[in-house]
Every structure is written in C-alpha cells, then in structure tokens.
Length: 111
Ligand SMILES: [Zn+2]
Figure (cartoon, rainbow, N blue to C red):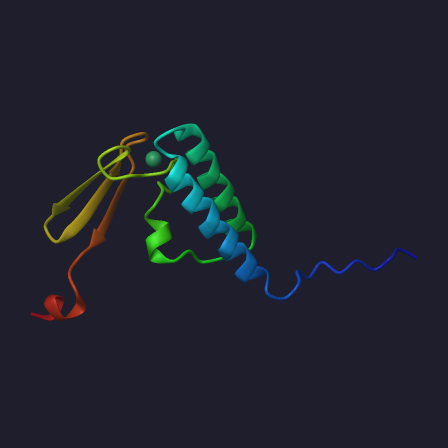
C-alpha cells in the first residue's frame, strides 16, 4: 500500500511566502543600481513564490515591477511615469508594456 503523503501545505505558509516576497523585492531595490540582471532575477523569484502560493501582493509591491517582462521598475530609469487624463500611466522601458491606473478618488468620479 502506498504511503499517504499529505499534499496540503502547512498553516501560515501564506505569511511566510509574503515575507519572502517582500524581502526579495527589498533586495532587488537595493541591488538595482549595481546589478540590474540580479534585481530582475529577484523579481522573477518573488513572482514565482506569489503565483505558487497564491499570495496577493500589496499595492506598493505590485507596482515595483513590470508584470509582462518581470523586470524591476524604477521611475526614470527602467520605467516612465506620466499623468494623462486622470490616470497614472506607467510604461516599461524594456518591453513597452503600458499600465494605466486611475488616480481619481470615488468622490471625484461622482461629480
Ligand atoms: Zn516590461
């Protein structure tokens, strides 16, 4: 008889995953100026952990990298940030991916 192996992940795994993602993105932020390839690698690792454990990244961390090419984005260096008709438009300078985020609050929309 085959041994029963529990495939259910242990409790608290999401917290550990979130911590690791945060740490990796902090490291990417620090190393970016010295070694961009390494920073991109850290982003890819963080993204792999996030997708494996189904962790939702906080907004601050989600904007730190390009979701298409998974490269670390720093405004003015690897991405362009502009404001166009009430939206923050971020363009990745590596792959050209454009992200539009509305910068108006809900109250302003109602007027
Ligand atoms: Zn990109």
